Length: 237
Length: 144
Image (cartoon, rainbow over all chains, first blue to last red; front, side, top):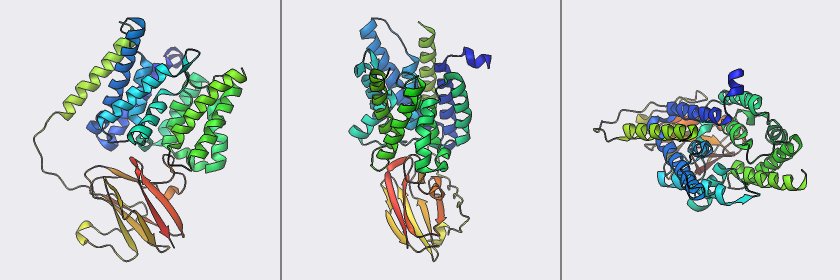
């Protein structure tokens, strides 16, 4: 466990996301997975570096931009045009850079880029990472909970969702990816237990609501929850 | 350059070089027959050479433009066979995308190009499904 204590959460997440890409090659082949991953990774890292250069006058790369690109690669519509995948990546970084409150971005960058993909390019996320065996995520969730201690949003989300959908939803690898990578993203989710529970509950209610529509329920619910989390910080804390 | 920058640059370079290596033009190779996907319910699906479906079995083809026919109506106890007539992988999964929790037996997974999967529907009802990889491609099985 000493290794886990020492390693940065960014490196751990990158290792996991790259592992998922590698697992994806067994189902879809290496070239298809690379075509899916390269455009958003390039788009997010280059766009982020350009924006930082204008702001700081120095070339700076961020691991969070790399993570955003990897998440988009794993969830965007499988087989979509590389240009659309790249534009989704650019949109994610632009929204992160320009929609901010108190100097911090509000929305999960990957989710906001994917929503732009739905609205502008009619490219619905595949969540093709959901093709990976769900037990992989159980190991990862255990690691994440040990490392980040952010159990409150997961509990807040799962309690109403299990009542609504039943236990079988826990075998959805797409949902487990969402819970363990996107829902608990440190910059856009609350750390406090009470706010974390309320945030998880908002996302769960959004999920149930948007399940009845043609919008991607996880993406839209997460963005709703991000907004709610920021309001909670203003009202409660 | 910071440590983060070095790691990011290395990852991007590896991905670019890997992509170039894999996607570089190759001499054309004659296509090999695709493996027929096994059926989750062990329902015997006719082979492509048989041409027609057996009694109590309805065929649905899937291509890049969607499922055809998009909506089918069958009797309780009959089965539906989805055939991938596209060159790309497709998928058959129960609503709701992406969690597929409405009717888990309908989560049939990926169908390779040229492959097929079948499912028997024992109970009357309306079963919505979609292609998990292209979620805008949807269909419905109505069981009477």
